[in-house]
Length: 183
Image (cartoon, rainbow, N blue to C red):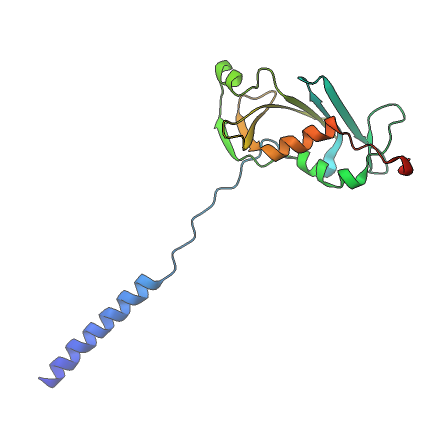
């Protein structure tokens, strides 16, 4: 009788041990889908960048010279103010991570709704191999946290963080010209 009790108790103990082992194992981390890119190039590949704000009638353009510095694309264009430019602008323009794909094949009506029929911003990028990338930026999303963006030759519409738009808009409205003492 005693042996039987010991075996039953041992079986219960083993069962509890297996139960606690299985229930206490860490759950696998959910897989995170990588953010889609509207376009993607290496920032070193950029040779020329132009940004226009059609509603304001303003635009600016920059070109990378042989010395690998960026200059305003004008005759005798000055070098950009690196304190404001840093290395960030070519990085931002090398391809934003989209928050999400809104429409894979947007209709004309959808493009109108997203503000892409009359874009708020147009961006033109020329690469070292002379390929070009043309981008249109539309309205902000209803919550104001993102902007609609698409490639000119595509009907895929994505959202990007509103700060991306604001940084590029500021480059045109307040160009990073060199300080007078730097000229």
